[in-house]
Image 1 (cartoon, rainbow, N blue to C red):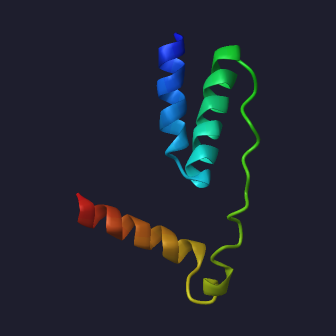
Image 2: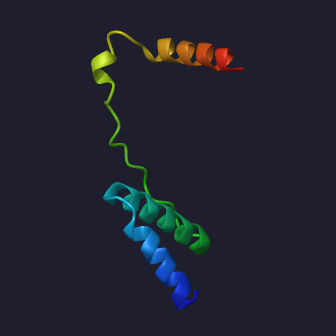
Length: 75
């Protein structure tokens, strides 16, 4: 990549927020890993339990039925 292209990329990166830079880093890591043929990163399950407070209102079966209903409405 030319110096001019590098400068343009750096300028674009400078406009991104910290969260967006994390996304860019994850994307670049995935591209490099795929090219190398290496293993993919282990998924983070930091979202697990996020809906725990709704467990009395919804069961997994209820959610499956609701998803099916919403998909039918979309089509």
